[in-house]
Length: 349
Image (cartoon, rainbow, N blue to C red; front, side, top):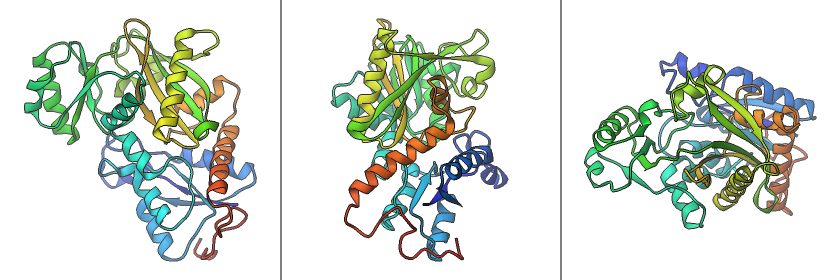
């Protein structure tokens, strides 16, 4: 089938004057090349669409696709990851990964924690700081942890994110409010082990691929998986495969991660971040419903590699999961996967 690829190419935004940190979540050409190659290797045709504005232009001239492999992150607003999926929903074009509602909730870490907490999963208590005066009303025991409410890739997280007193809390919140221009999530600090768990599938069919423990090396910014530690992981981190059958704490982390994926309504694949408290009890931190897919540097492909799944198999599994749920959704309708939907303009595509 013909699969369109939507993505935010980092080089385009850098050329437009955006900074390295502003574009940290966007993809490089190597990621798009790898996905394109994998899709073609399993028998599909591909069409590189690009970002949301480029998608709009292509739709306007009549282009259509049987499925869109969506990697877009968006640039503006706390629902930025929802923009491309919402446009595709409008045109009834199926796509990989989660829908606009799920993406918006998962990007806002406070909403995500509220949903999973109300469902009974362990997650730390938190407060949102929308203005600096909100700091004075916080009544959580120290140490605390502060981060932007709607960022990824460790943006806004530094060695100062672990906070030991109110003066430090006030200073860090003031800096984040100014630099990130969004509320700050302040939560109880978790001092235990940190895992990221790979999930494939949707609903009851979702399953854990495996887990990876993040170990900070002595040269790293201590105790926090910061923006610097993530971006220089080869210097500052060690990533180790972990199996629930061998480690009770990992098994509990995987149970929490899979439950969160299902409760939040994530589709096809996700990566869930878990950290334990001082008693070794895993807590939900956040979820990435459109996980990075660089074949070497992204966590989800790393996890797959640890547990014997090749990059091509990962992409094939994502397509299979999307195809399965879309086929169920549109059974009996005119939307299908055997050919591009009505209105596809081959010359424009």
